[in-house]
Length: 167
Image 1: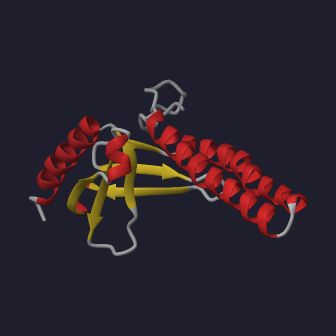
Image 2: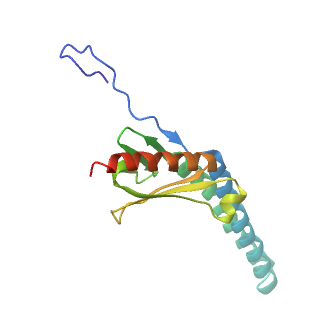
């Protein structure tokens, strides 16, 4: 997009540099999908086969259909997550059907924390959670490499302190 003089000659304005989530988050979520729905399929097949009859064990295919459907949905959801660091704020974009973009001004950040539950730690992942004065702010970046999460936390904290000093 060109801006500048009325003749159309000017500087080129580019959008923010978006960063997607690492593939480890997608692998973790898909593995959890396989484990839970796989166990549900086996459990349903055994229970229905033993209690009602072998023909009813075919209903165990329903969780397997859920695996196929969830596999695709998880991929689309993972691909929709991205974030960008700009001069004055952080952008977080997510969503497939309902696109949601959160803008968090550095000066409004009150707390930036890095969290990692047991499953995330097993897969070498961490999440960055941003807290602001607004209760409705849902600024989370899941599935980051722990080193990147710590770098982002330190950078956001530094920028937040610099921007809020003038308030």
